[in-house]
Length: 199
Image (cartoon, rainbow, N blue to C red; front, side, top):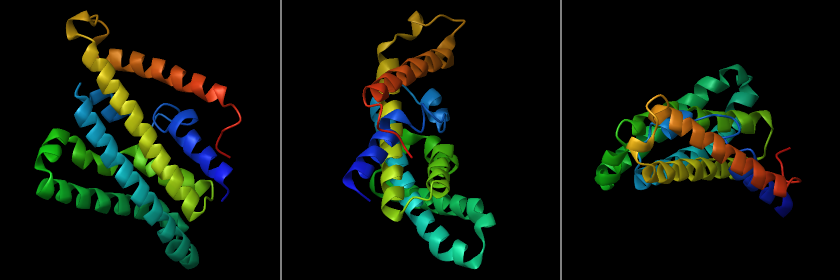
């Protein structure tokens, strides 16, 4: 893998093909997370951790176990088990050593196991036949992109007083409007660097 290829994968996974704004995966926390940027950032770090390590583990599992045994049809099941195991390990670690962070996640910590963005990254990496290094870079970039969007959303929502939101639009509607504007912003940045895209 060349340096140019690595930069292309990172840029595309964070900006031009952001897992949340381009593929619309992992949108539930984006809409439902509180207006607390710190909680959103912590959740983004957790998603980045689980995404990166689960994609790397799933690559090894796929390449050295499922492929040789002809069990690719069970790929999805194994991916889910790996993601659930990593999420549980992270949850136990946070509960034991960082209880304040664990409490700030609320119900969203267990929901990491069923975050479609995390599963989607492993599936995309497999379908694109990335190498181990490319898979790890793509997963890390996708996690950072998710973190960036969720943190920005929380910071923006915090600055908008609830009483200024039209009742017919509501909190969810406002989140969707903000997400649409963020998607257009990310698209505009990607057009500046138009040659950078995932192959």
